[in-house]
Length: 270
Ligand SMILES: Cc1cc2nc3c(=O)[nH]c(=O)nc-3n(C[C@H](O)[C@H](O)[C@H](O)COP(=O)(O)O)c2cc1C
Image: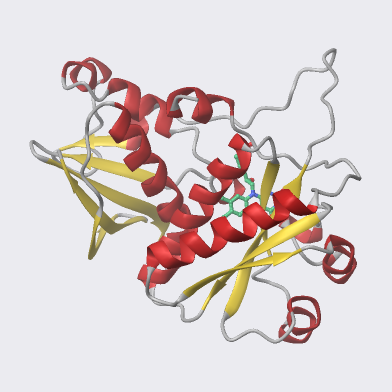
């Protein structure tokens, strides 16, 4: 499926059928998890498949997920970071999103679940002894059929002009200019990437020969690097479909504009 269609259609699934994934498919998933770890290649990222989802669900019920609303699924995949350097957090979610795309092509549904607030002892109990830290897991399985008579809930997205700046932070882009540069579709579809609490903190600073990914956050808070990695994965994939084959290069800088802060995450040559 074209990445544009995929992004428009993708959505988090929070209700799963009580149906396990068969063992051949689980084996294929395990091989893919290994290949992603090798692709990152630093040893700092591990994907852990929890085949018996019941135990994990019982352990995290009332505490995992937004406000303790834990998502129940037959299996989960933990994103384990061996250390919390920015690069590992960013590429951890980059590869998690690559995994989600693969699982979707296999007919499986998913939802990110935040478990950063869960205490250490509970984590040890549900995740076992692990070298690093798991703050996010992925619920996976077969989503329940949707009722065709009920309008699907849809998470709103902010406008293209709001997420793209030209030449200067807060100098909002003009959609016609983006179209003229052949970047209209890319910035239209990139907005369908998922983000924590659907906050969509990504901003793109577009200059003549490069685009810089910024993460917007409030003074006194932390920028969300997990959301950054996710959008980087989709940007590269959408880019490929329009012949833009460059990869992001990480950068580091922070700018304050009143109460808004922008963390510079990465640059991509156009
Ligand atoms: C890093 C991350 C953590 C998330 N954590 C949760 C969660 O704990 N519970 C939940 O119901 N949804 C969670 N989500 C799903 C987002 O709320 C969802 O992606 C967003 O609202 C956009 O909706 P969509 O994915 O259906 O397009 C998470 C998403 C991301 C990217």
